[in-house]
Amino acid sequence: MWDCVIIGAGAAGLSAGLTLGRARRTTLAVDSGRPSNMVARTIGGLLGHDGRPPLEYYALARAELAAYPSVELADGEITAADRQPDGTYAVSLADGRREQTRTVLLAAGMDYRYPPVPGLAERWGGDVFHCPFCHGWEVRDRPTAVLAAGAVGLHGALNLRAYTDDITLLTNGAELSGAQRDQLAAGGVKWNERPLAGVEGAGPRLRAVTFADGTELAVSAMLVKAFLRQRSTLARDLGATVSISDENLGVEAITVDPMFRTGVPGLFAAGDAATSIPPSMAAAVASGYLAGASAAVQLAAGY
Image (cartoon, rainbow, N blue to C red):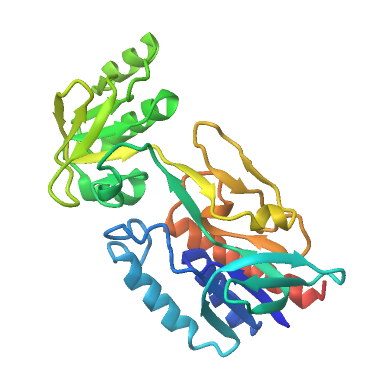
């Protein structure tokens, strides 16, 4: 019987594991090895690790957890979880292993779903990115496109003015309102409403976007609106509330309170999966710490 099983060992899961390990709570963290930022060249904005490659960060974090004998890291995937009549949980792994635990902490991250524009996936995490605070500094002063429609596109384009003065909003066929055009013009932002055919470049580098009419726009960076969705049904299966609080942001998050409790006894959630705002490594580490501490407090209280 574990004190806590953590589903996912990315930034949030590892942070929670460290907190629980230091609280001398027996903890099993199970990870499928698919961190959402694996394709990113570097981490941006995480104090003490700014500019570090994500996989290097995870290796360092795992080494830190190895110092705590009550914490075990396992590679694998949890396929099912059930709350038992006595309030504990049973979790099943894809390899047939079954574990019992007093608490569960969901930290499996999110799936990033971006527009199906040819060539975009090959450049995702580098010249093509979803968060200006995570990647904007690395592409500063470049000719930059923003691929998004509506209010999200407008705000994203205007926000990028801190990074570059050469910005073009691409709506991919959606039409801007007169008021939106006026706002963009006042902010010195260009726009193009034509449908896209793809993005071009050498290898992972971005050189230009191509339009359906065959013309091109030279850009070397692109901010893209991505929708974030839960990677599995586990949160819902266990009775947690999952909702999209803002249609513009499009983040399908597990609902938690300030201490990352889901409202289901013994069930916690942290990281990208439990934030209704665009996620970051720094936020994931912080939420993992709070969720781990919250679980430790509950375990100490004996309920």
